Image 1 (cartoon, rainbow over the protein chains, first blue to last red):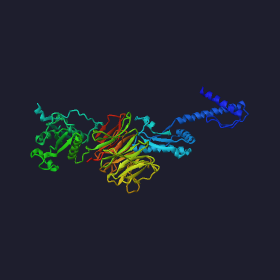
Image 2 (cartoon, each protein chain N blue to C red):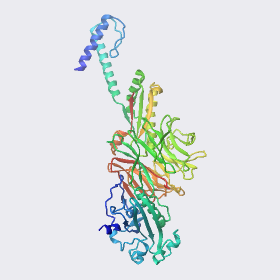
Image 3 (spheres, rainbow over the protein chains, first blue to last red):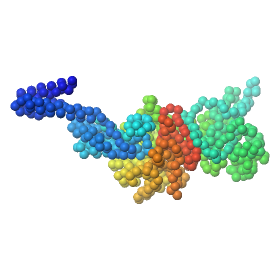
Image 4 (cartoon, helix red, strand yellow):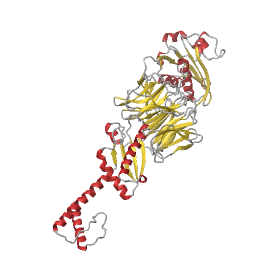
Length: 172
Length: 454
C-alpha cells in the first residue's frame, strides 16, 4: 500500500516536472533527472519504473544503514565478504553526509583480555581501512577498542562468542 | 559470680560463627594425596573482661585454613586431636607421634585490654628432638623441659581488632616457612575486578587478603576496568580504566586513593607492568599505529620503545632481574610468547607448543613462566620451565585467563568460567592442587597477586 502511494507521488512529480520543463533541483528524495517535454505514456511508465527502482534502492540502503554491526571469526580481523556491501554503503553515507563515526572493536572472552584489546583495535582498524578505500576521510573515523570488556552477550557459548566478536559503527 | 568472671578462660572450640564473611569464598576443588598432616589446636582464650567472651576471629582456624589452602598440608580434624595443649609444658610428644603429624601448632590469645590481645603460639615437630637447635628461637626463651627441644616456632605478638586476621596470616607464613623452608605468601593481598551489572557503577577494583577476607574497594566506575598491576612495594596499583571512553592507564595509591593518569596516548593504552625495582613501567600503546611495548620511566614519564613490528605485541611481564621482558606477539601468525632484552636487540621466541600461547607471567623465582595455553579448543593455565622448555598444562578448566603468580612462586591465581559464572581460581605450580574462589556478587576477574607485604 505504502509502496503504491510512493509510486503515485513519483509519477505526479514526473508529470509536474514534464509540464514545467524546468531544471530546478528537486528534493533529496526525488529524482533530479530532467525530462524532455515529449511526455508519452511509454516514457512515463519507464520513468515510473526507474523511480520505483531508485526508491527500492534508497530503501535498501536505508535498511543497510540500520545495520551497524559486523562480525568476525575467532582471532581474525578479516572482513567477511558478505559485509563488504554493508561497509561500502556506510562509507558512502559517511562521505556524503560528512558525519563522524566511532568504530568500536570487540572480542570474545576466549584468550587473554590484553591480547583481545589489541585484537578489538585491529578489527576496528580493518573496517576503518576499508572505509578509507571507499573514500572516507581518516578525520571522520575514530577507532576505539573495548577488547572483551563490553560483551554484547555475556554468555559463555559459541553463540555468545560470535555475537561478541564484532565492530560496531557508531554515528556521532 | 563476678569474681569468677574476672578471669574467664574459654577453651576455643573453633566452631563459632564470626560476623566478618569473605566476599570471595575459597573452595578446594582438587587436593593432593601427599599433603602433609599437621595439627592446629584451637587456641585458648583468656580475658580479664566481663563482656568479651571470644576474640574477633579464630586465630588457629585462620592458620589451619591458610595451611590447607597451600595444598601442601592437611590439618587433622579437631575430633582426632589427642589433647589440646596451650603451652609447651602441656604437650604430650608421644601422643602426637602416635597421631603421625609433621607439626603441631597451639597457642593462647589473651585480651590485655578491650580490643588488645597478646597472642602466643608455638609449632613443634613431634619427631625431631633437636628442632629447637635448628630454629631461630633464642635459648632461654622457653622452659627447660624435654618437650622444648621439639620447638620450631615460638612467638608472642601484640595485636588488635584491626590487624588480628593479618597477624594470623603472618603466623601461618612463619609456620609454613618452618615446615617447608619456603617463604609463605598468606600475608599477601589479591587485587581483582568485580563486575556487578546491576550496580550503578558496575565495575569495581577491589583488594582483599589472600583468603578473600577484608575486601576493600579501590576504585569504582561505570566503564570497564582492566589489568591491575601491583607496585613492588605493594602501595600502589596501576590499572586500565575506560572512564573517559577509551583505555587509559592510571596509578592509584591504595591507602590514600590518590590517582594519577600516566598514559593517555592516541589509540589504546594497556597492560601496565611495574618493573621489579619500581622505577619503570612496561606498557602497551598503539599510538604509533599498532600495539607496541614501551617502557616508561616513572620519574620523567619518558618512553622507550621496545618492539617494532606490525603484529600485535602485548602483555609484557618482567623477568625478576628487571633486564628482560616476555610478551605476547602474533608476528608468527598466531599468538606466542617472545622475550626481549631491555638493552635492545631482536625478540626471541619462547613458546613453540600449541597454536595459542598468551598472557605469560614470569614466576617471581624466575625459574618458569606461566601462560594461557590453547589445547583442544580450550584455554588452560600452563607452565613452562625456563631451562628445559618443557610445557605442562596445569588446569582442566576451559576459559582461563589473567594469570598471576604468588610472590613465593607456589601458586597461580587466574580468572575462569565455572558453569555460567566468571570466577577466580587458583592452582599450585605443579597443577596438583586446585581451588575455586567465587564472589558473593557478580563476576570476578583480572586477579593480581600482591608482592610480599612487609
